Length: 321
Image 1: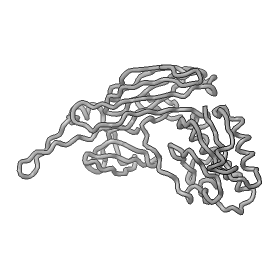
Image 2 (image 1 turned 60 degrees about the vertical axis):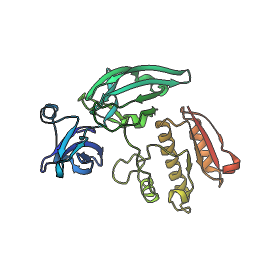
Image 3 (image 1 turned 135 degrees about the vertical axis):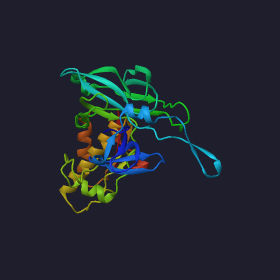
Image 4 (image 1 turned 90 degrees about the vertical axis):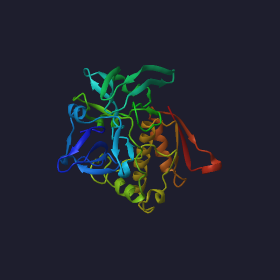
């Protein structure tokens, strides 16, 4: 079951589109009236393409209202489910696929951005519920992969709701890339999957952050921190800002560094050009450790003391490649 799939409740009459994964076992489904309802995956079945084609799918639904007035309703259709996927050709070469698991027609552009400039890779259109292979990339050159620039428009014939164009800039980190491995929708093979039309995550609150930071860095279970899709340009690492006890001693710096790494990785993954870390002056240990790690990161073009007029001597500005 994937975002964009048409589903039906096994115990009721509700039908709709999967629009969000709440947990590994629970999804959110948008039904015809526009309401979103949580369901356990075990409570749903996927509506086959043949069934949808034979028993539904009109672009306009006309219903009788009291007093013989007629109302035109826009039917439920899937507008989420656009993916970028990598599958193995062999141990070194990956095929790059675009997957449209929606009911929309989507014209797309894909290009690479590096120090040499912008290089176009693909232009074309994806019909509803289709996929296409558009490029190949070499895993041996992963550390020097350029940023991918993805642009898309969304079209539905007949009565529909207009959508804003989508522009995404993607940079890949080894750790997050390898964790993205799962079964690819429509291809039914394992690969590395990234959803392009995902909505921004809610901001995290201090209590959740504090709880998450206390977990092991590699924890993926309960209590693990899920970072915002679009990090802030300025990240405050002071104990109070993170909801931590300033009297924690050496453990405090470890937790601050952990948060610094998470924010830096999120900034790189989201294609940000710059980010500032506010670490204060203190003993200087936190600043020294941050700049030590920045100097070894190949996604960092340079770093320097941030504007003293705004931050004093307690912040580091980072320019990302």
